[in-house]
Length: 297
Length: 297
Image 1 (cartoon, rainbow over the protein chains, first blue to last red):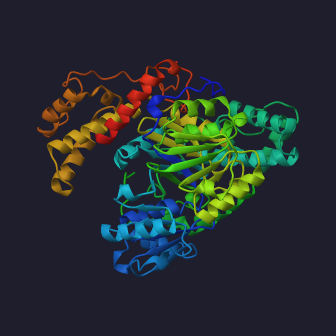
Image 2: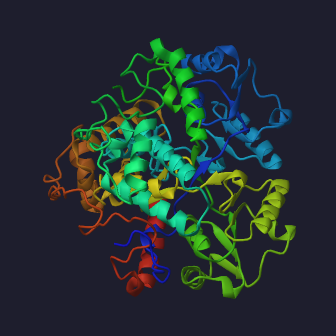
Image 3: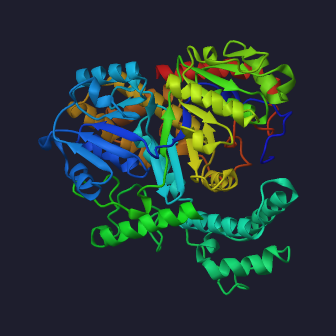
């Protein structure tokens, strides 16, 4: 099966016509997401939105906050603005780019959706699928890698089952590998700069050869000096060295599992496999450093 | 690892804070998507949008249409309105809910984005990531199952690699199994109607037990009479019968592969593994019937 359909292969699989969603990766840098509510559903929304660069506003009386929502508000004061009150009216939507209602009161939820429609702001209303511009799905997140699974209305339980099934095929190294491949490509572009043309094609071909020859897991070993070595011994000599040539060693592939290994593939933003609470502040600092690094590279 | 985080497990994996997209399943029933352009990128957009229930408008001079875009326009006249001209101005955005530009002219693309911002219509501008409200990713579609993979700016090649990796873990039976599980749940609700409460919980528990005990592949054998048998012998007797008890047989699990088997997992809306062109019209009819069925169940 060709990886890329040729232009003339205009054959449509009728099983996949209609009935589905448009799966999108929504961009929220410099945007504001309003979350109305502070209970279990609100904390699930925060799980998703915290993974973006959005600012958040949470509207909920103190008494309605669950522990996780409260924790998010405490941990990210620079990103989350919290107001100890219910939704008051259309003015709440000023400067807001996306709205998520997470309240039990369907009547109020419908009112908020109506205001969003007037203001042309995309909205998800928990438990009222007919009113939603978009749905959430089960997710896998591993650094730069994000996977979303939707069963189009067949319920979160089946989506979760599918997530487990897909996750079983991942080693847990993928996110780190993608980050390192990005760093390699950035260094290659520095060494052989320019956009498009024969050089651009050569760069792309060489990167493809490296990705084909190396196991994804092996990329996690790349540090700055190994990247330079790979470019010296590989790019410059129009070949692909082995990881051993660069002083690394092939990483033994683990039996696919989501629970073993030093790089457990995260099933969600939450994990009790590791006492994250202990290293949280340090971790957050490292994380922001990582994000900066990932952006620069 | 608990499947569901307990309320008090408010631990955040710092590797997954910030830097990502909000992964969404956008709903397009009764909505209109404007695609500006008719070349390779436009046909890729059609691959995605044809899988939803959206109406589409394609703006492109005849000379700019590639074979696949032309084929889509021919095959789906009731869903795609085609205009043999370029984008003329703000009036094109009337009654439009989503805009995708797929033209080489970045200046015109920027102008269209600006008009979309004024009209508050979400827009994706091909090749101009800074102007996009959302990105597309690599996709797996199998009937009701949709999976989207994003590497957050690390390029379509890596997303495609990840898609292959994830797809290798699928048997290709999942879409059909999800459809049948949906039909089973619908029949169970008919037999034991009502929303929430102890009965709702019992229904959910029994469905979970069935899903835990059966292999996903086995569900593909369920027809109407087997569903009734499963409810008679299972739900009514508070147990989970085997597929053999119902007259079926366990399906031998295939070695995970994306190319073998009678249910090849589709890599995209296009496949040259099967001569779809021959059965296309019949297939499309079946597909619409399936979609109707999936909605009713």
